[in-house]
Image 1 (cartoon, rainbow, N blue to C red):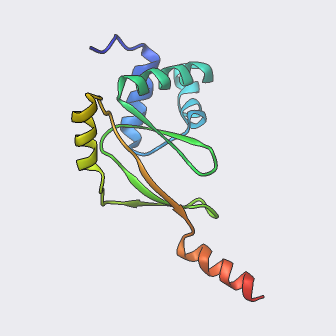
Image 2 (cartoon, one colour):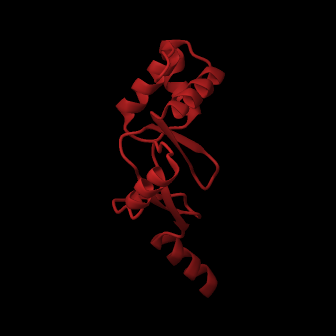
Amino acid sequence: MRTERTRSQERILKLLKTLNRGISAQDIYIELRTSQNIGLATIYRALEALKLEGVVQVRTLASGESLYSSIQQDKHHLTCLQCGQSILIDECPVHELETQLHNAHEFKIFYHTLEFFGLCHQCQLIQTDHKGA
C-alpha cells in the first residue's frame, strides 16, 4: 500500500541502507547536497514520509539530536548521559510484548527501540575521582 517515492526519498533511503548506521538529517544533507542538489527542508520532508511508510526509523539521543537509519533490525542501546557514548546491546526482552500488542490492538508495528540512560564505566570513574578531590 505504499505510495510512489520521490527521487529524494529514494536517494535518502539508498544512502541510509549503504551506511548501515544512524545519521542526522544535517549529515544526510552534507552527503547529498553536492551530488544531488537537495535542500535540508526536502530532506526533512522525505525522512518524515519514509518514517510514516515504515522503512526509516529515528532514534533521539540524550543531546536531542535525531539519528535516522533504515529499518533492518531492532537495535537497543545503553547511552551515557555524560559523554554520549552509545553501547549496542544484543538482547531484546520486548519482542514477545510487541507481538502481543500487535494482536491485541491490531496495530501495525514497524519497529521498536529500547534505550537505557545512565553513566558508562569511564564516566563513573571520573565522577568518583571528582567527588574524592
